[in-house]
Amino acid sequence: MEKEIDIEEVGQKAYRSSEQDGLTPIMVGILLMGVSLAFSFSPFYVYLAPISALLFIPVIAAIRKRVTYPRTGYVRLRAEKPMKKTMIGIFLFVFGVMAVGIIGVIILSVIFGDLGDPKLWRNRIIQWLPALFGMMMVGAFLYLASKSGQARYYAFASLLVAGGIAFSIIDFGSGYTGITLFLLSIGVLSLIYGTIQFIRFLHNNPLPAAEASDGKN
Amino acid sequence: MAKTDEDNKGLQPIADIDRMIHEPARFMIMAYLYVVEGADFLFLMRQTGLTKGNLSSHMSKLEAAGYVAIRKEFVDKIPRTLLSLTGKGRKAFDEYRQNMKQVLDSLDGKGADRG
Image 1: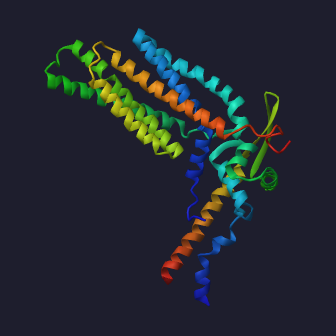
Image 2: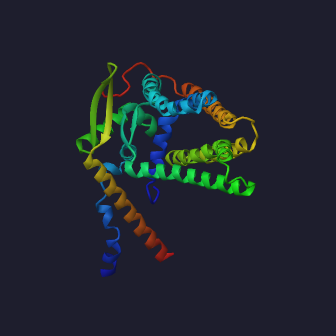
Image 3: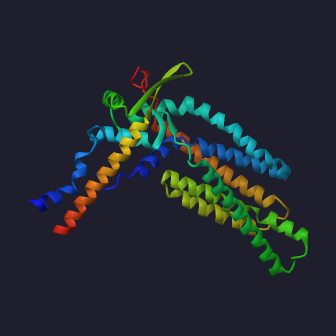
């Protein structure tokens, strides 16, 4: 027996098991594709994204009830605690990234000598939205890496930042094209990743025999 | 003789080890229930690798000890048995971990002294 019983690892295994069906990346992929579609019409519609995300939660719960739990069992993970600290952490992280982004835009404006032109400021912020979004997503991936113990999330975070910077540097001509294409790309990749996970999940976890699944009935 | 008593002091936590938890299968069950809010039988079977009968038997013992609560519920008319640690079970598991760590730490210390 190990000297210290690694409870964290047990928790990570339980988390991985609860997320192995790939439904979360599928939902995120569809959501990001929807947001990119919204951006292509008007940035105003982007505010609908959080509402759509809330609508996805019961859909995923219903699919899991029918597909996931009969195969791998039901687990209710422990709520984050303390929730208030987590929320403050998320807020500070997002605020920090935005602050870094604004400072970056100021530095660029000083370098290019257009500090006094608000229109150029606006364009520069829009141009660097992919990089900002990529950096914001780093927080989510670091959280997933610590919850699941899977190093692949560090690679995803790095790719997202690199991709965000690349999409910001490339000149797409018009305003929101960069962020639209960036969101579409990661949405499609997330959807493909989730779908592969889902197919593998169904393949590796056939439905058990039709007897009562809990052994206590 | 006095020195031997002194030596054994470090191993005193062994006497406090909870035998209900010390059994490997029950330890696994407790560890999984410790990190989650609750889980059903199928989940625990798959995670621990225990058979249905084996898991059921250990669960009954843990329930009798007051460490595990077994709650039956119906989801879309399908019965589901939700298992979770009780407050007593959580405390017992914390104490078990602490005792085991003390025992192993003291053994490490003795090994280092002799090495």
